[in-house]
Image (cartoon, rainbow, N blue to C red):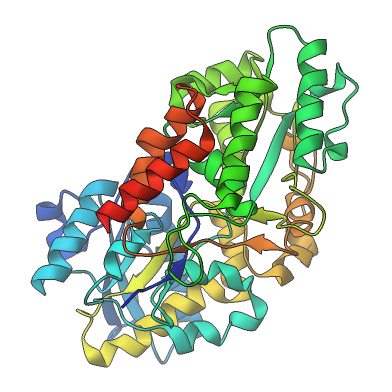
Length: 447
């Protein structure tokens, strides 16, 4: 039986998750797992129900401790004691797989990176169904963001953020060509703007394309209506939509010559950060969480960058898609009498308006409750991005957010895209249709 879940594709690299290179394991097994217990907060009330939590992001552990404390304040009759442990990304997921397979040693709550999630919904699913709890909030959410963590019609986890893909422009380089970033509405506009910017800025390449990370290319594939699977569970790697998207990328590099491979292989490397700061590139398209890379890794560009909605293929098409993410789940090794409390806590922590506000204020991630976007207290100008209000740009994209559907060989698709397909098109000049046919055949063989 085919299991499907809508999923936003991300690189297996931890930088693509919007977090630090850490992972989680429960306190009781932290030494064996190679993890580090997270710092504790205020002592929970006596008699609190205890939960262990694994994560691979330090900031997530800190955030969950805060949310646990807030839960206890709001629910004095149902207090909890949360014990997070942070472990390296790959090790945590390996530990989780081993624990769920053996039937012992798993945490009660766990973060699962979106690119790994399909591994845990194949065969016997050892995650607890949270459909009813999540659906209680669904009317207030961007519903497509729940889809990545669904299988067989059930909700098994909920994400932190939307991960809406945006366009990032160096406004100084565009100004030299008299190009207004806000005027770039379609991908045809983007290509023409690139030609003007390069003519006015010798030595500058307009766009950077990852060759060992999928986000820029797969964003276009999803936006065009493609991806790895369709809604019926069919592999569609060589679909017309994917050919259209990959041809656009190929033309940017090989025909129009307004784009080049990102230094270091992707735009999360030190080599790319330096090249961007040196003015070698004028734009990238990446999820909202990439905004943090400028103050953190490209500080000299703060005040010189602007964000705009992702260009569209044509009017009425998908306005953006989602990339990156981590779902928090409850494992079936949680004692039965604790499962309802665990599910209530996870969905309350992430999906309430207060929780989504905290995700923005404390983690810097874009919420997927649109009512948060209208909260005046959160609509603050961002000095790194020319005092723009981030929420206004993202909200303008929410009308038609493209999902992605995946199935059993999703992890293999991701690896093939990262290591072979994009490199073949960008660096080796393989025709997009041929590259996608090869990908389709490889994945059919792996199924």
